[in-house]
Length: 221
Image 1 (cartoon, rainbow, N blue to C red):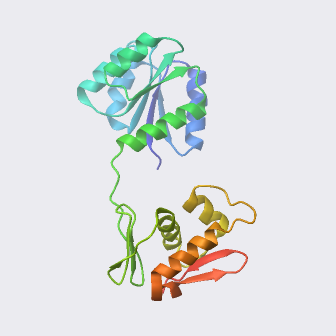
Image 2: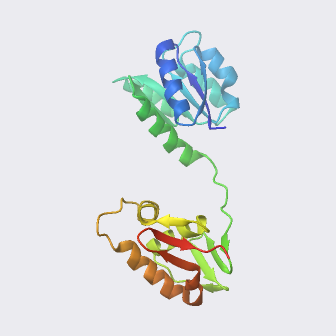
């Protein structure tokens, strides 16, 4: 199940459109249309999107009451150009605001940014293949207990291979995941980096196989 999002907005048409888009992006969305309902429900969600202008309780008062009981991340939807609502919302503990009318893409970008900052990250366990061990969080790799002196790019590429041990990883995948850019035509960067990784691995280099014209394969055994 995706991240649980509470969307509070009395604009029924806009709410339906945002809900549909967010659910396509993998979020689980519940919609309410007034501030009182938002306050009652907020604690059960991982993030809340609050419109400022709502019946029963406006978004500012709803935020005030939510903050009395919960630290759930909150994004405020504010009228474009209404700086007062934005400032008050942030002072009351909103995590961010999005001016209306907003695009679904903009809202998703804000949701992702806030969740990255506010959700605790589980410590990543080590990746292990044979006696090759890599700790993603520590940016550390070892072979038979000996630390490997890898550059940042080499570490990234080795991590991609280890996460995909047992299958062929294309140069396109390696470039996008390891270098953070698309693979350019006649680009030899991946091959050069892999050559350096093999040199540093020493005897462990036998774990990495070249699949000519495709990419690389890290053997599981």
